[in-house]
Image (cartoon, rainbow, N blue to C red; front, side):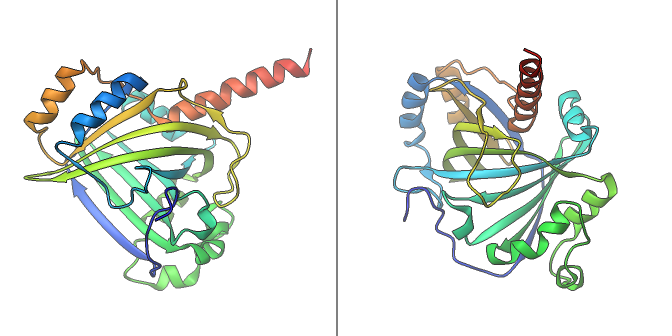
Length: 264
C-alpha cells in the first residue's frame, strides 16, 4: 500500500447513517509526549485499516458555512443543536482516490447524528456545481432512494457554501471491545482559502507549531480504564482544538495583514 494513499476499492455511491452518543476529547501534544504515548497505545490498539507503511495517511476536508459564518459562531458558542457539513478526500493525490465523502455531522444535545455519502471520484465533477451552491444536485442522486439527501437539504436550507480547506496527516488506531475506541494523531495541519478539492493545495498556512499534534480520542460509550490511565500518566489536558475554527481564524488574520500591507 502506498503510505500516502488509502487502500479503498472503487464502489458506487453509498450512504451510512449513524446515531450515537460519542465521547470526543482532544489534546495538544508535543513530539516527545507523542512518541512515548504512541508506544503505549500500540500495547492496547492496532493501526486502523487505512494506515500506510509509515502509519498514516492524508486527509483533506472542505468545510461549509454561510456568508455570515453561522457554523463558525455556533461551534465557538457550543450551540446545543448544530450541523457541520464537509466533503473529504483521502490520499496524497485526491484525483486517484476511490471516492469523495460527503458528510453531515449534527449534534443534538449530547447525541451525535452522522451521515456519510461516498461518491466515486470520477463522478464528483457531476455534483461539484451543486456542492458549490450553483445548481441543484444531479437528477440520479435525487432519484436514488438508497442515498441520503440530507447534505444537500441542509446546504440549501442554510445557504451554505465551501469556505475553507483543511489538510492534515492522520495516524490512527482503533480497538473494538464493549464499545468502539479510536485514537488518532493529526499533524501537519494546513488551512487554505483555495477551495478546489482535487487540485494541489495552494496558499496553505500551518495551524500548529512545528512538532506538535492534536491527539484525539473517540469512544462510543464510556472511556475504558486503560485510556484513563494513559491520560493521567501523561497529564493530558482537554483542549477544544477545532481545525475548522482555527483555519477560519488563520484566514481572517491573513486577510488583515494582507490588507495592511496594501497600504504600506
